[in-house]
Length: 432
Image 1 (cartoon, one colour):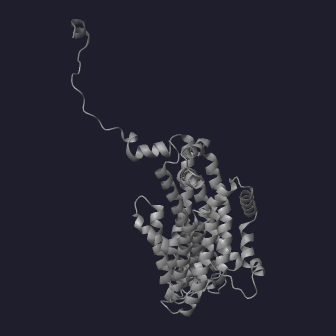
Image 2 (cartoon, rainbow, N blue to C red):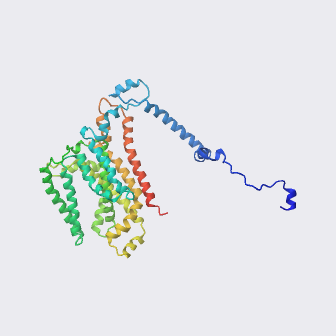
Image 3 (cartoon, one colour):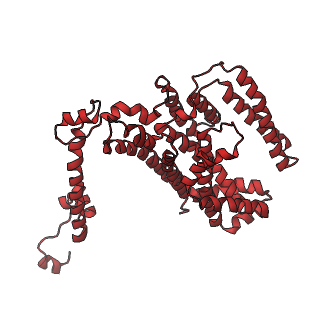
């Protein structure tokens, strides 16, 4: 230090001060509250208003829920117990839970069958939803699951699902055998092979109807949330591959294929789903041979699948249109044929782009399964509107029953949404 500074500066620190903790208002929860709830006067007012509304909702809901009655046998008895106090009558849920979940005709001693099928669904879906974490060997069980689930839920001899499975295997074997000669011929031969196996197997299963047989449950006895889950799972699983074929057919250079797909998509999109359900329930029977019994659930599955596949086809067509022309040219430059280029290059990218739209259709489809209640099918909504609210014991109970319906549907729809977001992050669909 020079002599000048030695005369003008009284003290100069030559060591670092120890680090000090930040002020209380700039760390921890206080900082988060200030930054996220009260950053300025306008957001502070919105926060106060939102907190007031939440308080009013909880002040009304919590006493109603915590003071609810769970053990009475009717609404009148429930009101006597409450004696004018605030409280829900949840006894309707404890008494009718089996009807809300399985319908009012499914044999109570057979509830384990749809429950087991529901649990096994997660095992079967795991290799498809989490392919990077689950061994591919589990795909063998995934292929068997539809036939196993049919046997568990509908019952009857085990030969029926086995014959159906053998028919598909025979069709696949014939298709691979003839594919090299002609694709259309292989497709026709596969269909013929499947029908031959099913026709012969029908006699076999009829003659041995008691072999490993479960108690048969007809489709008209299905109901409750089980029916919504069956329709949602089957229709979503079928509509995705059909939607892909429709999207590719709409972009085909063959005019007949293209216009068949265009007419199908535009017609289905132009008709309300409830109209298609009425067609499945009433009108379709007029076109069937006299005395034929076409299963109602199968008719409804066909109509809902047609409806959702048309929407999924348009979502996938948007994904195909978003791909640059260079991707198609790159596939051609590699010498790939149409099927190889679609399977290896085009469709993987188009499906990644289409994930949000496909999930949106799937969530909407699952909720739309409640429309079957208007054609006298007793799904969850049909059970609430029909047998339960029409009974003298529980006529007048609304909030508890509709709250139960929300409790059933929300986790499924929210789970589908969260899975799609996780899958988008995993596949990095935003191309960042």
